[in-house]
Image (cartoon, rainbow over all chains, first blue to last red; front, side, top):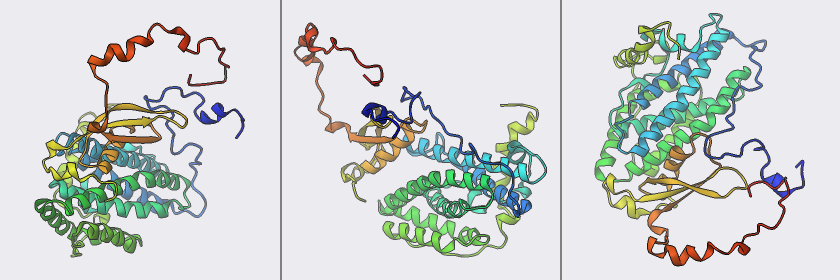
Length: 275
Length: 106
């Protein structure tokens, strides 16, 4: 402590922040991070990883945003939108990084708005329609557990930018997973109707569950998390029934194209617009 | 779940979630300040809702939530006997001291 005065100590780190309610003191997650690519990092592979993780986040964010005005409670609507905005923030940073390293110099908008369905590399679970609240909760539980396990590993990635993005994301994803776990237990251990819907949601997730574990070795960890939650909720584990193809290879369901059409419509109608 | 008050959840219908009051501590060393209220089925949900509704713009480092019905409040009728007597007693205020420049939040 630099100062012995008790009041100065209390106010430490907030010298110029006398307001409390207006959201001052935001931090740039990439502040001070060197944006050069270290020797030995495969830039093609790095760009692929960034785009795939960004696509997962962008598509998930769009689905979560669709809950706005439709969620069962105003408070839940804000919660879901918040989670979507966290993911959108991750997508923006990851797209920007991909554009820096893949040699094309594309900006985040080029990736989000000016690629077609076949170019997207998100897992198919992210693009499925929202269904009911139970399905959205189960999907969020699976995807956030999976993404968190990834990001915890990426914190040690040799690329300092990807590592910094992952470090920021870990805190966000921990909350997303907690939110989904809370609701999974609440609904699974709730009424007969909520339990039935959660069971159905887990069945619907089943075919898309295995696809998550092709590229990275986080399967045991994610299965363990989902098992803990489903056990606490009195629900069965999702049954793994593999579907042919993979979103990471550009194979998508019929649901992605309409999602992107809506997401991209304004940017494509006004390609020179700025916002 | 620990910390869960089942009464609200047991009522079932979403419109029946009880009201909670939310208090946010803006930063270390300051008091929790009342910022508003929300509906939630239990204490845990009230905390997560409070986090999403009241701290998403970097407002807080700590949250309290309490069921509104657990707050005892003074009434309008009591306004005069409660507060009027304090209006004319300047000697109760420590206004005759010089406050050092480096003492914040006073």
